[in-house]
Length: 123
Image (cartoon, rainbow, N blue to C red; front, side, top):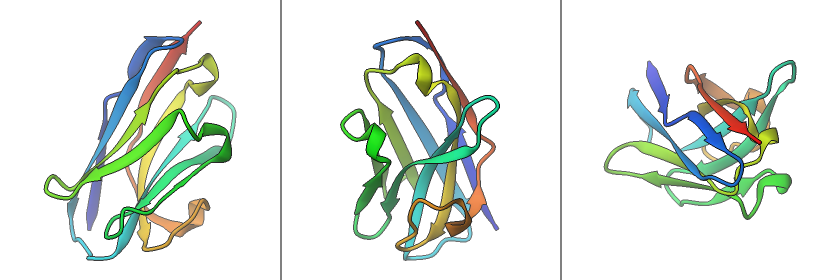
């Protein structure tokens, strides 16, 4: 079983930065992908970014390129989401997820999910 635990969310002002963390534990595989998704109130969960663990290859939602950066620390088994120039529309619960290597932007690509961390951006 795989456990994913997000942290780092909180209340910030527009223009601030925030870094989310997702620590993975349990059964591990040498080739997999880690993704971040977010869900705003009353809206569907949507893709934010993905990183392939072994190669470091990344994929981003087009609307977030340049502001958000996904990275990983192999030694800590942790993936990060650096969020800069935050806007009120970035307010959402952010979820970490793990899927097979090469997983893309589809929710169904990911089998394991964390519990989510709330990010609130005030104007």
